[in-house]
Length: 220
Length: 192
Image (cartoon, rainbow over all chains, first blue to last red; front, side, top):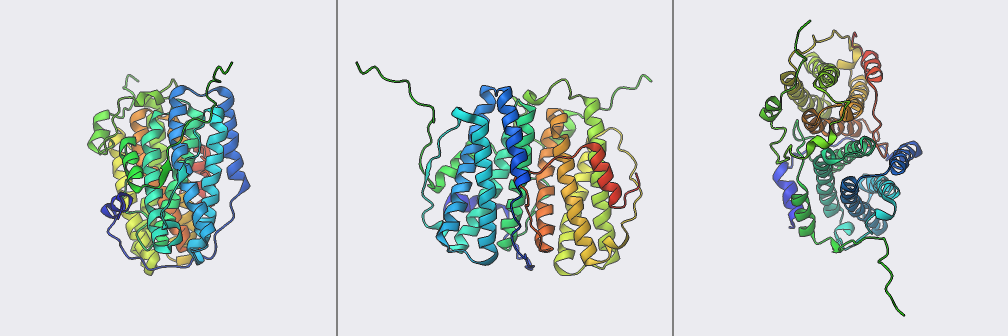
């Protein structure tokens, strides 16, 4: 069991829920993505501080992880029924988040790292457990970083994503049969701890680096 | 009038564990700008209190009337407890809490389908209310509100899951203004 699993099991008592029926996953609305991108381009035009670039790149690194996780799960075709529908829809949303952050950061965006999910995306039970852990972690990460943002526009965009991650967390918990909202208050988690947990999974196979080209070398 | 503006004290928030998870307030003031002030905080907290009053009253009435079964009753119990905790936290950080508004939730606190529909609207509204105000408040209130808003989002996704609706239909949750939130509360039967 890796540390991501441990972090999750420490917090919820694996409370069994009577399971109701989710009819079908809804469609991702174009309006939501468009609003986010509009916010992104407004903020981009206004210029983003060095501080905010670093916070946004951190958010992007977590969105990369989530997007890759759901996309690979979808492609593995190992999931069935409601879990498969959820993976498809949530994957599309996480990819939209990646796209929005990349648009916002432009050339300052960090590159997508390579991931190795070690078979978790091909096992329905492990998929759900990991999805719960990732989404809860994302909520904690956004909550921890949001107060650091200087631009109010960027902050507003980040907050809109923060609650979508919380919805995803509750959704994945529901599908996994554990209580979707275990406590009256969600706590932030410092970056250092998030990094440690993500590192312990071994899912990030290669560290990201800047997309901006290195200074050309003198070759003459 | 000579009255000092209503203040949210740092101590009162600390008491409630706003920083219990190790988020130091050092560095947080980046968020504060000219638009944020103790007066503005008091106004925002009053609006958020209206939302929490409504949620608390809604679940308490639904449980009292005894019409909910199974999953819906479990949801109402757990979420009702959360809303009470939110209400008491917000009440403790405003100097003077507004009076609880009257309401008529009608069939929504008795009939399962009507309950699920109203609860989903209420929780979605709460998310939009917090998101709409978060950029307007001082750092202290922000940290406290951020701990609540994601729980409201979890509630929204939970009731939508039970009702067979899409738990997270958007890529980003859109904020709503104070006027929109008040109108939404009125639609749900709150007398404002």
